[in-house]
Length: 206
Image 1 (cartoon, one colour):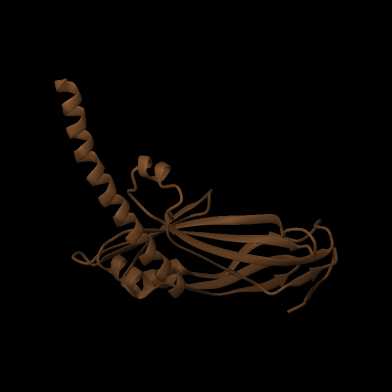
Image 2 (spheres, helix red, strand yellow):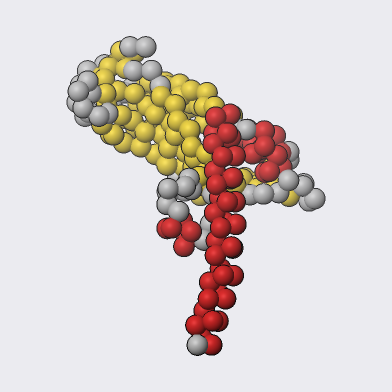
């Protein structure tokens, strides 16, 4: 009987905590939804040389997100640069892509600004003299190599850039129970114009 009472007391203590955390997650999801609406990807802009695709784009972050980094909260931003083939009656076909993970952190007291970039093979760490120069490097891609079109079938293609930042320090139990809630701070994507590839030549369509 005593054990049953203790179990009930424990349940009473756990339930309010779970409800509080659920309410917090719901509020955060609304905040992050607003933040995603304020984000913008400028681009992607494509350049072609000898059948090689090079991509340039820039991510403009929400001012609140930038302020968090400025105050010392480290962030991990994931960039996807993907080539798709366009089909009229079928879903767009993924061809090839790159994933780049960039971590950004600053120490306002020590005035240290550090960012890393990892593309799956190479890890680059850079230190900066200012917060602005760090953010510019971390959020800009200039003439970045994607792939060569040689050997690819004729068709209409485009490049999609997707950027996301995942929520940190979420207990695994809550992520499993509340799977319907967003697990990202934001996710935004943008498509390039279409171009036609004819095995040896290409033609921009729009």
